Length: 173
Image 1 (tube, rainbow, N blue to C red):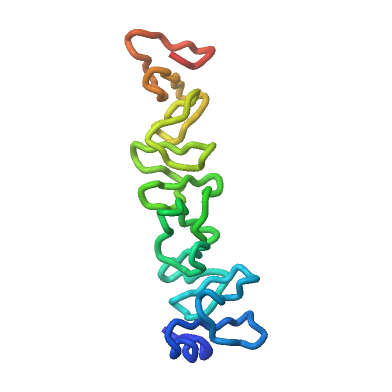
Image 2: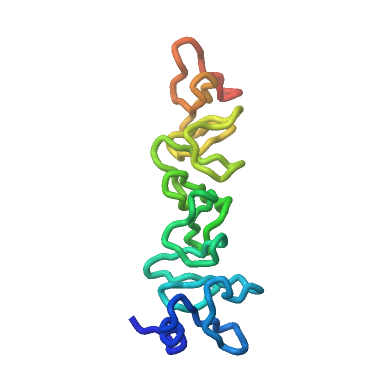
């Protein structure tokens, strides 16, 4: 891997980064990576950058102003592949996977995306049903094919429980 000359020179002083946006072009500590701009210390290039390295994929962590492999779960921040930052909430149409702390387009099996929080949860909020095909929470279940909202089990079902019938007008059991 080739590093910019200023990064190599700064790296010789342990723990410093080339601040390319600084008019004096100094080697600075991580805490001094241009605090007026959104810059992050990148251990892959030893420079202060607005975007983190993509190989390996790194994410800008605003809590420590460094590029990290994994976003900090202690702050409930999620790795967003589009902006390359750790953030909350994940931008639509993505949801925060609470198992991996990454923004995902499809929640893990058994989890459902909640639009109000942009998180993957084990269940859905009141008044919403778990759509097992899309793995999201919905107010109204699918019409093609037709699914019914089961208020007891809080999910979308093609066949209502034996104690109820599907109402095609309300699309609920």
